[in-house]
Image (cartoon, rainbow, N blue to C red; front, side, top):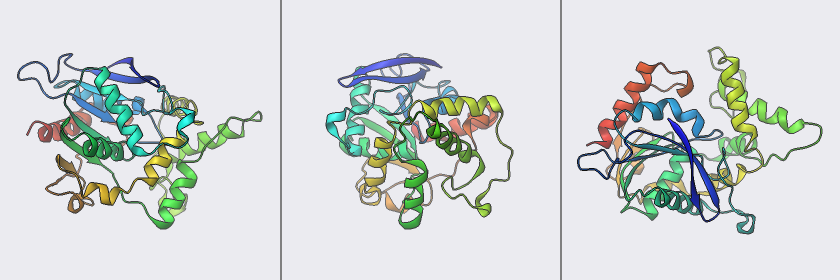
Length: 277
């Protein structure tokens, strides 16, 4: 996988990419895959699975605007809605020459995939959604508090501890926003090198990622999923919400950065079978 930047009017979108350079353009080639990451996190965390996809197709994994190394939404917009992020990512796809593409996204990225598929159904061949949960009540409030607040740098470094703990808790609790003993994972922490990489990705976007999260929280996902018309595969808990959707349960559901080559290849093959159908 390689890194690059694509231009949109607001600035540059950072992305990882690999696979056939003419994917979707050459006769018989697989449709390019636009792969949107969850959050908190960046495209960097998706590279192992993206590399497995790249064995059979062109794959592009951008940092969502305001996250990773991508330009944030411009200040004059205030708080943009999720449709703004969807349009920005389609303009990014235009910059790369992607006329049509498949979409795969998890959590935050999954909701953005829904918005893209609704606004640009003629561009999307297949849609794969992972963990696009309907969050309400106490769970939504806890997620907003722990995952989505604006975190501004300060001179005593307090913000660093918040970002470190938020990153670390992704590995120690599930759901990630429920900091109770009953929700502790029965697994070791990842290697220090992996935690360092994750922390660097989190700290660089701490002051801008909240805009993507706020758009995510405000998006009426239940209503929107019911309007989808593209060929979709999703988790069993949401399959009834999407007309004609196919249910799937991932063959590997662990941390992508710690998956074995065999586990990642199996997951990529499972998703690719739907994309190629």
